[in-house]
Amino acid sequence: MFVRVQSSIARAARVGMTITVLALFTTPARAATEADLEAKLQLLADQIAALQGEVAALKADRRVVVTEPLVALTPGESPGVGATQPGSATGQLSFSGYGELDYARPTDDSSATTADAHRMVLGVAYQFDDKTRLVSEVEFEHAITSAEDDGETAVEMLYIERMLSEQVYGRGGLFLIPSGLLNENHEPTRYYGVFRNRVEKSIIPTTWREGGMMVEGKTASGIRWDVGMTTGFNLANWDFNSDDGRKSPLGSIHQEMAEAQASDVSGFVALNYTGIPGLLLGASVFSGDAAQGQPGFNDNQITLWEAHARWTPGRWDLSALYARGDIDNTADINALNLGSPTPIPETFFGWYTQAAFQLWQRDTASLYPFMRFERVNTASQYAHIAAGLTPQSAPDQDILVAGFNFYFANGVVVKADYQYFDGNNDDNEPSNQFDLGIGYAF
Image (cartoon, rainbow, N blue to C red; front, side, top):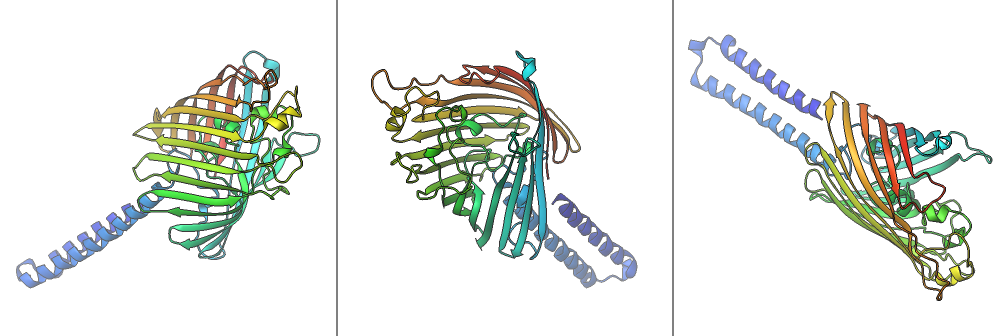
């Protein structure tokens, strides 16, 4: 963008120089009439006015880009699959991807240290015509996918997008839910720390996607709105003997459109405002019945709502988020599973605040120290069964994370952090740990 602006300015300088030379040498100075000079000055004025219009148009284009939530706020970010947009050349095929490798060393148990090729994601987008495109992503986790290993291969996105007007888009297929700061912007170059924050993993399921239809709109004042109807959760998938529900209540029962039960559908609404440069304010709500017609389940409405903010004044990058989930009518289900280690919670919540600062920058390299405080409770309340039978609420878990992101090339980041846990309600997780990681996005 700036190259184009500089090119326009350089062209204006060349035009002015050419006219000046012509004025001085093609006609003797003494012979130049007043009419000649006026004509040449008018020509120069016309050229400058045209170039000013072009520069203004380029700046307007740039303003449109900046209004996108979380775009161009952190060095090294990549547009990802969105590199192909409606309006691109018909038949255009584009590729994208991201990945991350990490090292985690618990400070009190070195035998639990792990090194992991955490994920590799490949994206393909295809432009059918000037208004219609395909977007797809496939994710590979933990290096090896087999029945004996923890690795996983999953379709993360697969949808058709249609431009309905210059500011309104429709999508149909498997897409990410616009919830929180991270779910739609989860590439490792877009967040601080080696691992994604706990609130947007445990309360809002990470890379949470559903199948359905949605409409997205944007306004010139910086408002983005999203509304959709999708598949939802299946409470029959809850495992009372696994710790998955303690780690992430909704993450343990989301269906990812893998032969998903769809007798009950869900809906969502999201709003984001970016009309003030450097500021993002937003909120979303997702709600639907998770009974899915399964025996023993009835009117189990699940509602997840969140509010978030991000502000980037100068070198600072400040953000905050609160999320809360509720599951209705769980008492009878828990009563049939008394004594199980993981009953279904009625409510769960989490919030965090984060601050990062651009300490150093040179060319494409930059250094961002950061600090984040999180509070998470995946079972803050259980539905009342009877005196002495209702499960006891879990304690809050506080997490303090401090570290840095070092972007040494566009789209490549090295990270390091230290995580301190207080009130840990998961005995299988180390209390404190040191992390290293490298990530990329293109």
